[in-house]
Image 1 (cartoon, rainbow, N blue to C red):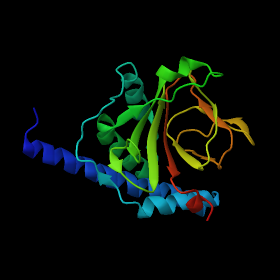
Image 2: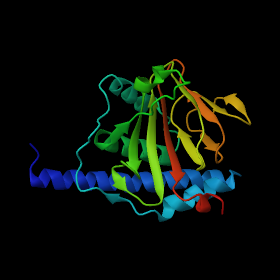
Image 3: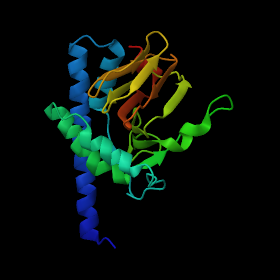
Image 4: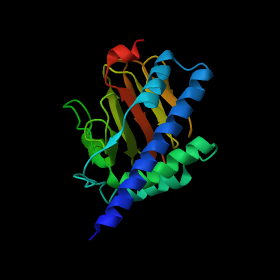
Length: 217
């Protein structure tokens, strides 16, 4: 049982890790903007910089990461790229945060193979079901077991992924490609996209703004 002093210390560690993740992810996106990334990445970078993350009152996890997926997460975090100080900070923060995240899975539509449903999870960091309340930004950590395909899908908000593992990505105007660990993937609003893992687990941070108006600025 955790006493009140330990609980306070844990909350402080989680809050500090959240702030570190926010700063470092913003720096990574801003660097890509300077190198010619799409304007909507600038919108996401700005949203990260100004977003207010408020830790929820409880650190209980209604839906913890299933035991069958935990080894893949550990494997992916251990081999994720640490080639830049911001990436090191992101991975260190994730190592602190992931045990406290709620992990959700996407259900398959009637026309989709349902095999992927139990082979993936999203750890919710901010936004709906997130560890941190944030009215402007949803941020999650995607995890897939090896040899898993996340089905073709689309949604109105634009989306970015910071890729932390090997894997393949699909966008309807590009086809399949491999951005590589440390790469950045951007999906414009309502474009059809997908991703799949090969021999290694797939791990990636993803984010989307709640307001389409902000994405289109």
